[in-house]
Image (tube, rainbow, N blue to C red; front, side, top):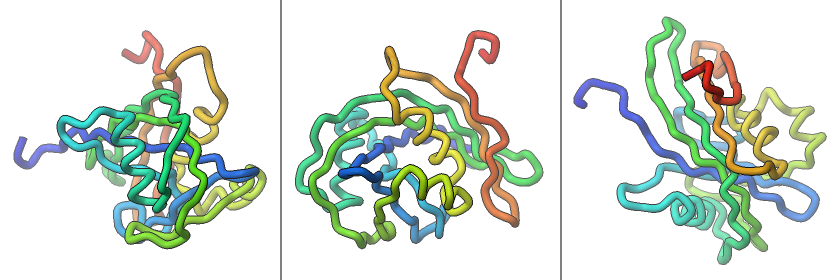
Length: 170
C-alpha cells in the first residue's frame, strides 16, 4: 500500500453536556482551527466502542464516559481541488454522556455550544462533522449508514455531498 491512500477507521462521539454540546477546536492539520466532534483513529485490534470511549477520555479529560450508544457510520472521502483522493475515512459515530471535561487539551480547546450557536457559527465547524452532528443527534430505529465527500482547497473545507447510503449508490 506504499504511496496509496489508506482506509482509516475513526471513532467520533457526540457529547451532550447539560443543555449544550461539546466540540473540539483542532490545533493540528488537517482540520486546524475548525470545531469538530471529539474522536480519533481506531487502533488495530481495538473495538469501535472502546475506541470511542478512549478518544473521549483522552481528548476531554473526562474521568467517566457513560451510556455510549453507537449511532452509525459514514464513509467519507477527502479530495483535493483536482479531485485526487487524499484520504478515505470510515467514521463510526456514537453518542455518550460525560460529567466533566477540561477546556484545554493537546489536540485543541474544548467548548460548549447550544444548538442555535452551532447554526450561527456553522462556518467555523468542519462541514462533515457538522452534518454528522445533525444527522446522528436524534436516535433512529437502528444504525445509519452515510456517504460523504469533503473537498479541501486553498479556501478551506467544503462538503461536496452528504447522503444516506442506499442500494442505488452501491
